[in-house]
Length: 127
Figure 1 (tube, rainbow, N blue to C red):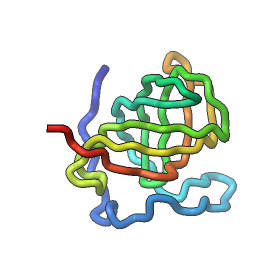
Figure 2: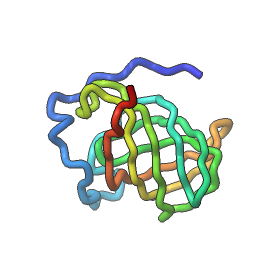
Figure 3: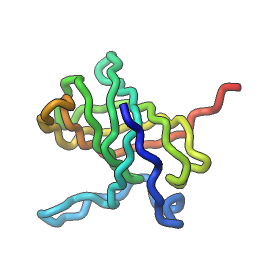
Figure 4: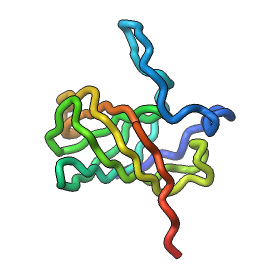
């Protein structure tokens, strides 16, 4: 697995709201621009845990690849190691509660899952 370096984010990233109402345009309903970030993610869904890989994320949403069978409307818990520079300085392990909005087939990568991030919490570091 290849992990790409963290991208550069806007200076105001940390002050953006964690969740915004969706736009009502027909072409793109995202409330925040997604940024390409490929990091491993642990997906908890219906009592099971699965591994995944993010494709992109924003302060209000995520797109990830996972082998677990989930449907639109599913509630997820995600554990993600966020790279520094995402407004959650200095980055680190986070627990996110998410709601699946779309699931699509993805050749060779499992299922593609788009979800809104309903809650984001930094996890404490263990020393």
